[in-house]
Length: 234
Image 1 (cartoon, rainbow, N blue to C red):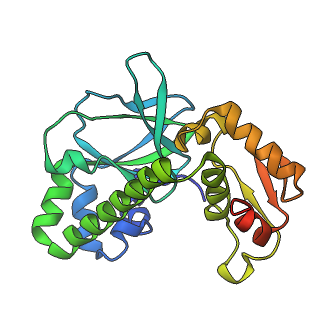
Image 2: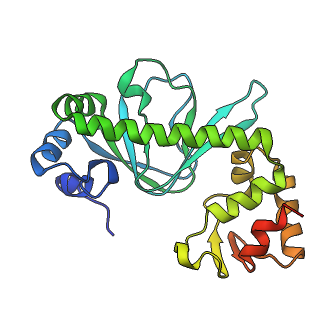
């Protein structure tokens, strides 16, 4: 799909999950309040920790990583965001600076919506506010599951869970061999799983040696899904 022009923003916004149920009048009202397209090149920062953010962003194409920096400069990847996902929700409800940074992992196109346009729609349409809260709730639950995994699951189990949860096959085919394409570099995913890049690569080699997966650059071919799922129980 070609990139939308400014005139096409209302139609294109309607394709995004959060705005899909809005009528044409609401979409036109939102886009008329300063919405724009923002293109980021690989490695370009959307915002950094401590910066103010007066906009709400929707990923159209590409991918962002949300990350935090330790005092020694080491990076912890908190979340990977792809098409249809949003960033900047906190700026809608408070005036606090960003607690983390956001950076493009590749060429990325974003829909940039001013805070006032979102708060105005919330005032007009309480159901829209509920959708925002539902999205936020899902992300909070996901982060809680991540913390639980860091505390209670081994590194091996985290890698296996990641591979199985990242599958693109339909549910009825998930027990059949299929391929998972890593959404980012191995180092980025390792940070996302709270692992060192070396450990992440070592686990992948172990799984490959066991005949459970086959590695082809960023494509991980899941050869034996059932056996992979039970491997950490051995």
